[in-house]
Image (cartoon, rainbow, N blue to C red; front, side, top):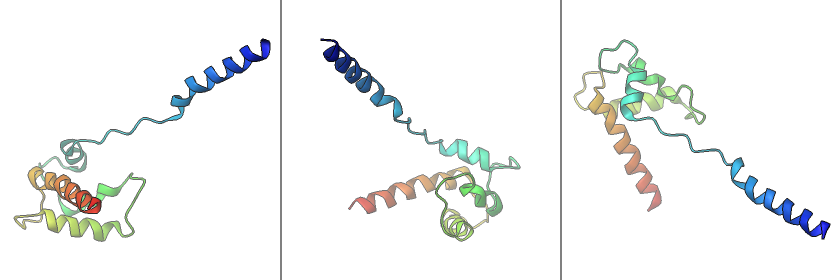
Length: 105
């Protein structure tokens, strides 16, 4: 009987602890929050230098972050003024979504 209770207690403990090891998913920051963080001089636009810091602090960095940032900057800068407005910056989320959908199909 003691053995049965001991096994039962051990199983109960194992099942309750099972979910505690999972780390919660990190919430994604809103494009507005990321834009504000990158806009070092608070001029409501991002220069190439400011935008180039987008991959800093990320765990997964591209092989050539500077080249990737320049290519993406050019793609997002729709009016070719060498600055990204908040609206242009928000297009990045749309591009990521399209790329993700293409990978699925």
